[in-house]
Image 1 (cartoon, rainbow, N blue to C red):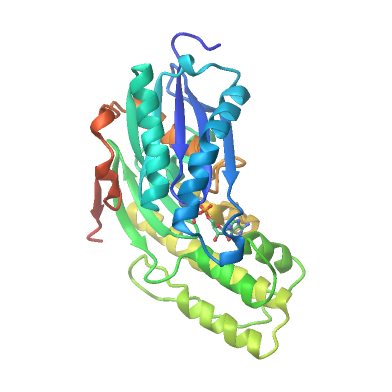
Image 2: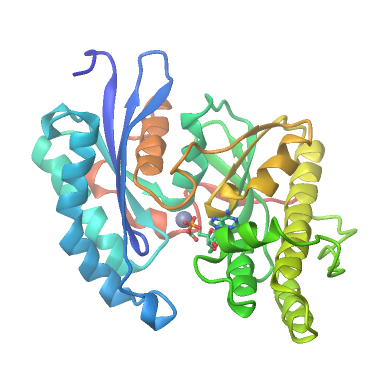
Length: 340
Ligand code: KG4
Ligand code: ZN
């Protein structure tokens, strides 16, 4: 059981092909801890070469009760101990999202506790709140299979989009390099593993958009360059090491420049690609205060949504109630495009 002053928040993410349920504890001093984090990763899509939305929705329906029960058991608590519920309302596959969103709303209504509709990217950003108390303003690089975005996180739940990819996400490029060199799936970890045995200077990739004034990324040219290098006979390990080196360079250089120009000392680096060890190492050498999500919180999960809910409660902006949800289909609640 918890002290009466702390609050337990359930978080649900069913935006794509992972059924995630997590529980965060918001302590009286404003710090947060993760009490449970359970993810059921769907394997049904493997033979299709991509996520099948209808199958994803059906699997969420079948699995969500069991994942929820596991999360409660991990936290050693009963559903009646919950003080609030948060669920991802977007962006994502609509049918998949609806399973977790309606489950969460129904639960909150049944228990008569507050409900917070979370944006998926807000979840990725607040995944790092398990490691350090995040005090805005700070910069956040969300780098996953679907996103490569830099946000300036400002007080009051305001997110200013500083820069993003012009084309593909970084994770997508990692996946492509793994696929074309036969390294298997998931691509990111496979490339990272192979890179340990390769020469990062073997394939002379150029950093995309070098010399730009803005804070954008581009990975589609690197995908093409990787394909050409593969066809020219580059060894998979060398290709992996060279690609990883240039991808890391692009991500770190642009984010560092944005942090310096905006005067931000703290940078959150989150999303699936933030699990990459070479990327983490390069970021820790920048001199910035870099915060990464804890173990199991980089890729999609429910605990990060619980942490986003905890932040909303702490900042007094979690009062949207059961009527909320649709607004999060917008790019990111309260996002303003930067005029930088
Ligand atoms: O955040 P996530 O689970 O899902 C999305 O919202 O996209 O991120 C998945 C992506 C995949 O592209 C995967 O290859 C990449 O994160 N990833 C990595 C590593 N682990 C996962 N990329 C590079 N290095 C890793 N160690
Ligand atoms: Zn994600």
